[in-house]
Image (cartoon, rainbow, N blue to C red):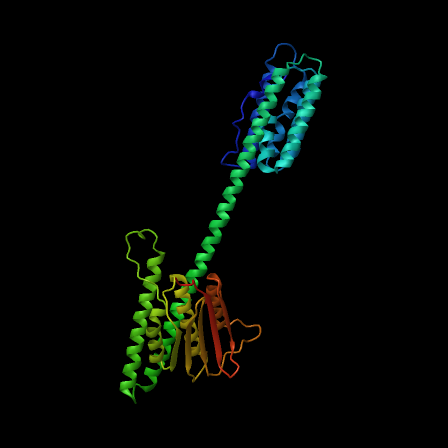
Length: 382
């Protein structure tokens, strides 16, 4: 009679969740079953020994085939009871572990079906068994089974929650990597373009026009210092160990537009700036987005447009900030089947805009040259 199923529900999955652990568990329980039967009074029945082993041996496959494992164990227990061999040699612990495993590794409906199947099968077997049945012990066994199901279900929910949190953390890490890559691209591409152009100018006129060469070298020095400053700002933001005590330098915004334009002019690109509407303070994110779009657009003009004049138009509307950067150069038609660095820059600008609910368009302008337009929603002022 299966009185002692109340043995232990504490058989949870071990940290070393391997096939070897399951095999060792099944082997130990099978050995205990045989030893228990051998120690009973009277001659041992080999059929009882076989069925006793079958009530625990399938646990070796519980991770790979939990449903099949439980079905074999339940069938062995029913056969053991119908044969009238008396109490289970291992207290029915194999069925408890199998129920826990099914509830942990399979869906709730599958676990419910297996629990119901176990209840029906064992009840019929015990009702028709040759030995006397103590129904209070049967009820106790089923309560332990129910506890194993509940514990397995809780474990499964916890595991799923852990997986969701891990996936969310991975997405956040990926998004942060994209943001860092975008910032590095904007900083390095702009300043290195200025440095490269002015270094070329200095080398070209060094022997013939010393004042121009000195101006170009000074521009290189200024661009280098600005690049280092921007990189330090980015690194300060990334330093999470001392965020509370660190005095982080503010990220640039449209308030620094004049400085940006002067650097680009110093690199040899004429830039015209027009501002319409009443400027208003913007949140740091959209403000940085607008600044980076202008920076990337002017950098692309420097690198790809050839001899050209760039125009920056900023319009502060009631609900929308519009930034438009155009040039009258050769334009940058996309090459089919080839993703150029410019394409990466435009993609980064578009991602920035979408992050703040904005829209960015970029392409050849109707009258020649290239045009980039950013439209960002802004809060309505009081």
